[in-house]
Amino acid sequence: MTRSTIRTPLLAGGLALLAALPALAQTPAAASAGSAERGKELTYTCRGCHGVTGYKNAYPAYSVPKITGQSAEYIASALNEYRSGARKHPTMRAQAQSFSEQDIADIAAYLSSLKKN
Amino acid sequence: MTKRITTLAIALTLGASLAACSKSEPAAEGQAGEHAVQHIGAFDGDAARGERIAADKQLSGNGQACVDCHGPAGAKPIDPTYPVLAGQYQDYLFQAIHEYRDGDRTHALMSLQIQGAVKAGKLDDQGIADLAAYFAAQSGPLGDLSHR
Image (cartoon, rainbow over all chains, first blue to last red; front, side, top):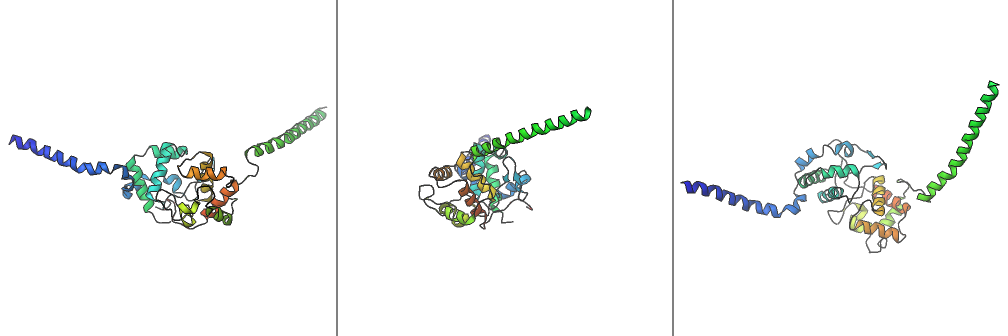
């Protein structure tokens, strides 16, 4: 009786580990497995600039880019470039650094899912 | 007496400001000359010229034209990590190409493409403006987050 109660959690733990293995193996490809629904919530701060048609960046002045309709892979690589400093825009760098890998995947999934407005 | 002093003061002030004006003009010219002989703005491009540059396989010296990777009209990239350019804002495209040129934005392929073209003397400020005009004028799937 005592033995089987110990064994059951052990077995459950082992099964959970096995189940987690494929997920771990897939981590590098997580950028394509985002949740558009969660991504929509995360784009709340993006809207201050990217939600205003023709909104201009200041110093230097230019229109902030259209980002909906780009592929999830491009959005993810752009955010990663801001995060690493390969792109130097200070506001975008700060934004990108505040996101986790999963956040980036979710934002990318949402933005790429939108049809032209 | 008071009248005469006031007149003198006005004359002196005028004289001083005239000298300031004549001094500032050559300084402004010198400044412009240091940065760019011809000042090309983000909207000074010609789309027809841009179309030819976008299709030029010899632009960067590696046999790849812009449209070879970004797709016809910049609307269908051959790799999902490459952006759609068609219908993007003209001044953003102008800015982005300048950033690649100046090293403010780096990408394994794009830095080589743009800096290669500039070094070869095939892409100047006017050419960058022309490319921006061309790709901005094409239709594509891009939009923004307004009304979402």
